[in-house]
Amino acid sequence: MVSATSGPRLRDVNRTAILALVGRHGPISRADIARRLGLSPPTVTAVTRSFIEAGVLHKVDDDASRGGRPGELLAVAGSAASAIGVKVAAGQVTGVHADLDGTVLDAFSAPVDALKANPFDALAELLAPRIAAVAGPTLLGVGVGIPGFVDIGTGLVQAQLLGWKRMPLADYLSQLVGVPVLVDNDVNTLAAYEHLYGLGRPYEDFLTVTLGRGVGAAVFSGGDLRRGGHGAAGELGHLPVDPEHGLPCHCGRRGCLETYLSDDALVRQADDARITTADDLRTAADQGDAKAKQIYAEAGRRLGLAVAGLSVVLDPQAILVSGEGSRAWPHLAAGFEPAFTDGVFPGFADRISVHVDPWDDTKWALGAAALVLRTPFTFNADPQADAVRSRLAAFSVEATA
Image (cartoon, rainbow, N blue to C red; front, side):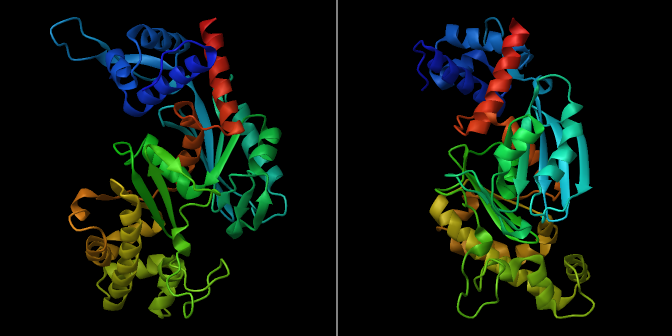
């Protein structure tokens, strides 16, 4: 329950809570907002009126009448604000400009040498004209998804695949481009997309699992992203499977789960001169090749056991599978489904939904934008997140002045 006690800070909390509820569960009536948050109807009316006047919320339909005057249903106005999101890979950046309801207004991609000692200038040069093209202050900021993690204590980025060690990406890039910048692991950004706009929208507790060049995971618990004590939660690919006899992993250890399930690992297991890429292996399985199908079934079994273990610990409502490797899911499922069913608590397999979200690189970039777009709906205390909320607040004040 949110207290309706007066005071500037409590008013801000009430505003954030109301906007979060409408953003996640709208269209919704004022009466439902008051009931769910434990706020007085006058408080809800005052806050929502200010958001409507600012263009952040709008009426979309009438609530079903229960014998009296129908209540207005409120939803977030997509055009009220926007963000730019980019997914950074070793040689490529994929980006989108999206509005507050997740509509992609523009998409772009460009080669970038992320392995440079200082990649900030290249990213800033790519972003600057796109930021300049967005008129007015309604651009809330830039989200960046990277194949690594952001240290919670220092804000520094570690991304081994990019050769980045202790990079102050958010703060430095923000100074270069002149808007707030939020950075997170790219699987976390994908989960942010799923929670705000995708298959994770109905759930407060779910896991996102990604397959492809690596193996990753992200955890949503209690309606929020869990990044762990150091920012590195979700490194499923580096779960030790056979640390004594397994193959070397790029992390420096041996026998990580990724050495069995990554695209390169699956191709290596084929040991066939005709199969040099993951696409080749999937095509062979599609055509009924027994060895290819067996490779996928065994990979699915290992994945099912690992995800079942996570499910025993975290008790999610759903598992969302994505990434370019998910295109082989019909073959992976043959091993995944029995292993997962046997690995979770008896009777829980039917209660945990498993969904496969078709891979689309744009979703990763939209997820990076969602880092920014979800910030007005959260209580994230990160300084860059505070800067995002300040931009929305300033825009709202101007609109209602």
